[in-house]
Image: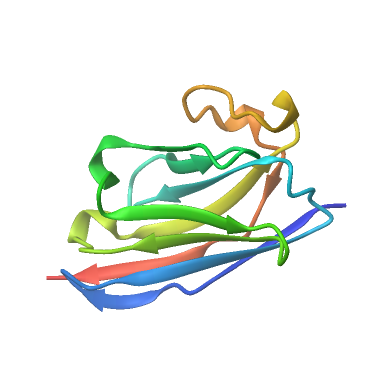
Length: 126
């Protein structure tokens, strides 16, 4: 059974940076993997995804500030977040999709992701 464990969340001031990690076990590194977040009073939304070939996609609000990457040898997914703002405050989840043969489905439909971590809190203060 696959397991994803996030770490690296915390509290920072606006303009600061954080690096989230997601350690994967029992999840093949050929899967599509993504980061999602759920802000206070909001629905969970996709943030960034990476396919088995390293192709990445970001939502508009984080382009140029966030970078998703993965270390296949360590089976770890990362999210480098720079120039954080209050709107980035959320619980961040990593997820993996076994469908699509390593390609990511277009969009961030959560039904395609069958493994989820427990989330890590990111709080950005002004």
